[in-house]
Image 1 (cartoon, rainbow, N blue to C red):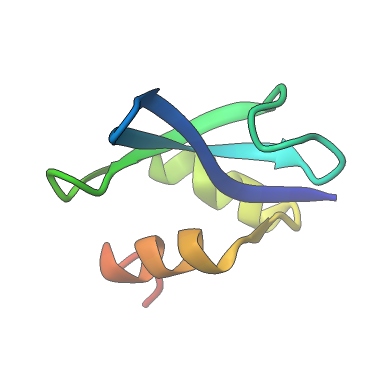
Image 2: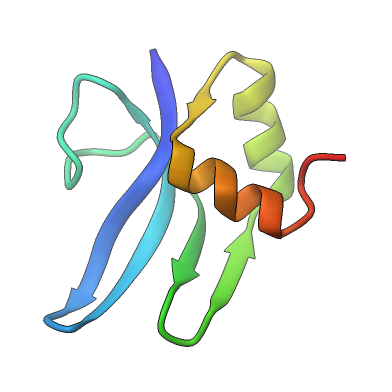
Length: 78
């Protein structure tokens, strides 16, 4: 099963997160299938690759609760 979840990057006290499609059996920092965006909570910036996200959601990928909230804030679900 594939999930859309956050992958932590950056340095100490200055984290940014990549939004990735990843198999649920892999750990948080494990090998991802594809990067579909990023989220910077400090500067409150978000970049989403909408066609890739839609493709994974159509194939049955489940977003985590945090990623779902980020997508909802970006008005992804209508």
